[in-house]
Length: 236
Image 1 (cartoon, rainbow, N blue to C red):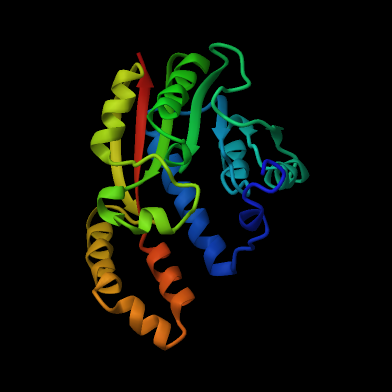
Image 2: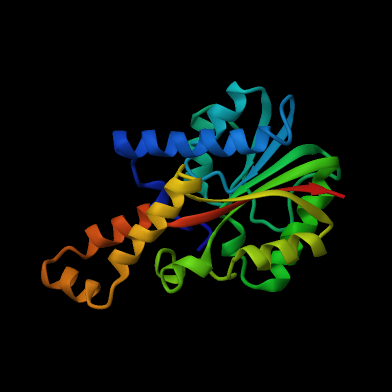
């Protein structure tokens, strides 16, 4: 399992519009972080995926290291010239108080349950320096409902705003900011897109998509309307 974990994800290639959209998302998340903690400093990204954040983080002045369990994805980052530690988390393969930011974009929902989620937050606090921050992005299960489970077979730990606030508080963090986004859209744009997403989840939509052989197209539309919660939480 460890040698093939997320192989399908590693093999995906972004289209030009997809890459541009992903870039806007990464820039918006870095801006959200930088309003509370700016470089220089050391950033650890847990679960970097294809490394779309790494170059932007380095360009903005962060000393960047990724922690990634997938051999394919870790290899991809190494070829990009990034510092990568290949390991499953938690625990984090890092010494105490070694970084200023822990960045985890859609990672916590992959925890096997509450015990592992608590261990993840505990490890995040351990490796952060005093006054360090975590930037945590998770799916908004309160909006997504059943699609939270269907979008990825490794989703296990249910993530909502209330649950994450409780988890972070119990783990020794103060949430300084939280925002809902769909892609890079926040505020009014996010609210409008969230309303639009109701249309692709009306009863019978899946049956019609199967009849027209458009199941994958419907999935992509739902995925592009997927809502996330972004937290900046400071170590106490």
